[in-house]
Image 1 (spheres, rainbow, N blue to C red):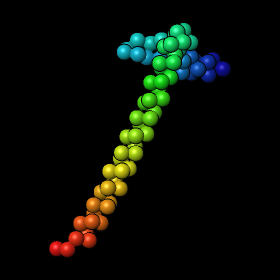
Image 2 (image 1 turned 135 degrees about the vertical axis):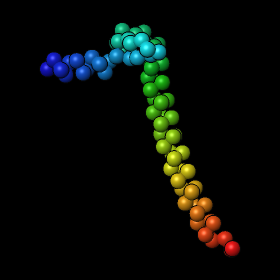
Image 3 (image 1 turned 30 degrees about the vertical axis):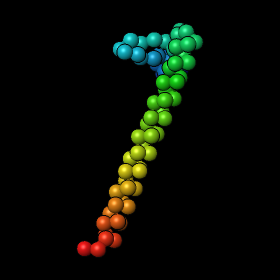
Image 4 (image 1 turned 30 degrees about the horizontal axis):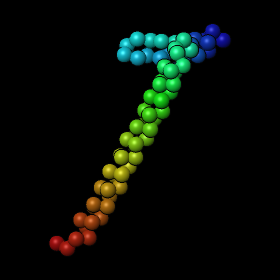
Length: 71
């Protein structure tokens, strides 16, 4: 039980510029900003993944194009 509590406490720690803060101790404005940053980071990661997928698809189609051109 103590281990689960310790893990829960670690999840509630926010590290910003090398300093650690307890999320629950922060002002509502700071909590909101943290949530926005976390959501934006998730969206940025999704966009990075989408870009990799698009680049791979483009590579496939470029290969098909090159194969279909007359020599």
